[in-house]
Amino acid sequence: MADVDVRMTVNGVARRSTVPPRLTLADHLRSTCGLTGTHLGCEHGACGACTILVDGDAVRACLMFAVQADDTEITTIEGIADRDGRLSVVQEAFREHHGLQCGFCTPGFVVSVTAFLRDNPDPSDQEIREALSGNLCRCTGYQGIFAAVRAAADALRATDADAGAAARDGSHP
Amino acid sequence: MKPAAFDYHRPDSLEEAVTLLAELGDDAKVIAGGQSLMPMLAMRLAAVDHLVDLRRVGELQGVVDRGDALWIGAGTTQAAIQRSADIDAAVPLLTRSTPLIGHFQIRNRGTLGGSVAHADAAGEYPAVALTLDAEIEASSVRGRRAIPAGDFFSGWWTTALEPDEVLTGVAFPRWHGRSGFAIEEFARRHGDYAIAGATVAVELDDDDRVRRCSIGLFGLAPQVERAAAAEAALVGTVAGDVRADEVGETAVSGLDSVPSDLHGPAEYRTRVGAAMVARAWEKALQEARNG
Image: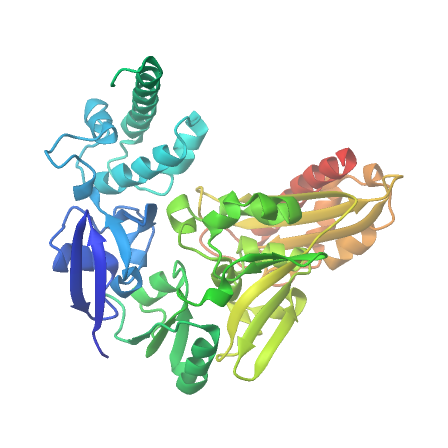
C-alpha cells in the first residue's frame, strides 16, 4: 500500500506531502496541514461540517481522498477572513445575526454560503433555504443562520453597487 | 482514517484505465466523484485493494450532439449538467432531475456515470436513463459496447457492467414533437434519497392522443422500473380522458417487491409512488399540450 506524493495550494500556500491513499482530504488538512478549522462530524458526507473549496467549488472534504486533490487549489475556513484577520462579509453576518451557537458546524456553513453567494448573489428565501440544506446544525440555530445569509447577500450586493457607482463616477471606491 | 488501506492508481487515458482493470480484476474499483463510494468505504460497507481514479481520463468528458441523441460523458458532474443549456434543450428531464440529487456540495463532485453505475434503487439518473431508453456505453480491453438502459439495471446496486469495464458515457435519445417531461419525488428531507418517485415522458399527436409514453418508477423496487402496463394502456387514448390518479394506480399495480424500511412499509411507499406518478403525469401532459 504505497504512499503517494501530493501537491496542493492551501489558502495560498503551496504544500507538498506524501500520504497514504486512504487518507481523506479532511484528515490531511487537519492532521498534515494542522488546519483544524475544517470540522469532522459524520465523516460520510451527511453533515457538511467539513465543507471546503476545491478549485472554487464547495465540496465535502470527507468525501475526497487527499490523493484526489493533487494539483488543486484549496480554501478552508482559515482562508476566508483577510490576512490581517478582518472577517469576511459572510463571517461578519453570522456574528451579527447569531448564526452560530456552539460553533461546531459554523466552518462548513460559512464556506458553503461563501460559494453560494458568489454564484447566486441575489437569492430568494427559498433558494437560501435550499442552499443551507446540505449543512446540519445540531443546536438547530437555523433561523439565525438564515438571517445571516439574507443579511450577507444584501450587504454584498450593496458593496457591489457602491463599487459600480464609484467606478462610473471615476472615483475610487 | 476510516477506510481500509488500498493502492491508488491514476491512469491518464481510457486505454490505461481498462488495462489496469483487466490486470487487477475483481480487487479493483473505479472512483470518479466518489460521492457514493466514499461513504461506503468510510463505513467499511465496501473495501478495495486497488482504487482506480478516473479523474484524468479525458474520454469521459464532454457533451456530443449525435443528432438523434445527446451523448454525455460519464465524468460530467451533476453541477455541470445543471448549468448546461445544451443538455436542458435536448434532455430536459435530466436537467429537471438534477437539483433533486443530494446538495450542491455533493453535485459539485458527483458524476453522471457514477450515479448510473451505482444504480441506487431510488437514483434519479438511473430513472431518467431508463425512462428515456438511454444507451449506456462501456469499454474494456475486450472492446466497447452500448447497453440499453432496459438491460442495465438488474437488482440492488447491481448492473450489467462487468468488473473490468468502465462506463464511458450515456446517450440520451431526443424526443421531438409535442412532448412533455416531469419528475416528482417525495423525500423526508431535501437531498435525501426519495421514499418514492416517478418520471414521465409523453408525446401527443395533433389530436391530443398519446403517441408515446414512458413512466419510470424509483424507490419502489430493488432497481428502477418502468410501468409498462400503464404506458401501454395510455398510448392511443385522448390525453384528457384519463384521470391522473388512475394513471398512478395503474403504474404501481404491477409492483411485487416494494421495499419496506424505517421510512414506512411497502403499502405506504406504493401509495406515495402512485401519487408521484399522478403529479408527474399531469405536469408532463400540460407541457406537451402547450408544445
